[in-house]
Image 1 (cartoon, rainbow, N blue to C red):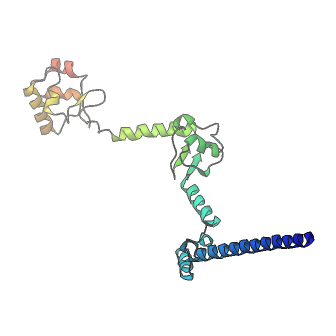
Image 2 (cartoon, rainbow, N blue to C red):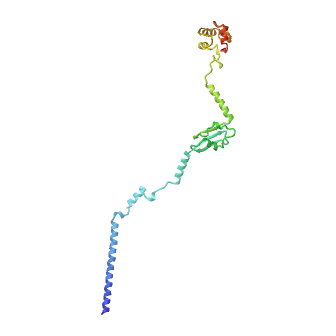
Image 3 (cartoon, rainbow, N blue to C red):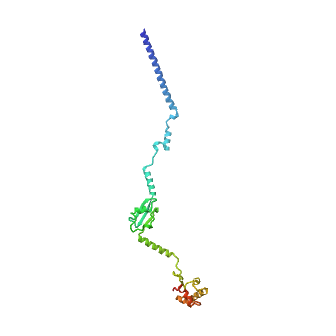
Length: 238
């Protein structure tokens, strides 16, 4: 009898455990199905529609549509920038290797001369400002010492040619030409006033000019005494 009770009791326990396990499994399955249904109904978990995907593709916002600059464009830009930062100069004259040289923009004359091999021994370097900043297309000419001296002489000649011509009535030694002097100039001579100056001009006009300085004594009012005082200050240019 005890054995029968024991068997019935074990069967009861087994049944209770089985029923509880099934209930828990069903609850779990029902919970998972409910969560899945909620996820499907939640707009946050909805997949983008085909239209939205096409819109993203057309607008270029997709990760696959992003493009990086090609190496060719970058190289071309760098080459352009490099060309803009250089200049060309022509170095000639008394240098070892004359020619056209490319240097960085902002270089100095001494750097251009160095590219040409430097100055020769016969070059006159003092005439070149080696600290000067070069410009694109500039010509840098180094003169020899002989060429520099010749250029200075030529410069003096040109400057002298630009000066006003010397008046013919007054020579470099300060003497006055009796044939071209004005009345005011004649009156600067010692012993010659307005009247005597007028007589000198009247005489040269009537006689066609003076042929010698001492001929002035033929003018009325001018004798040997006056001539002695002015003979070193007058001349006659034919």
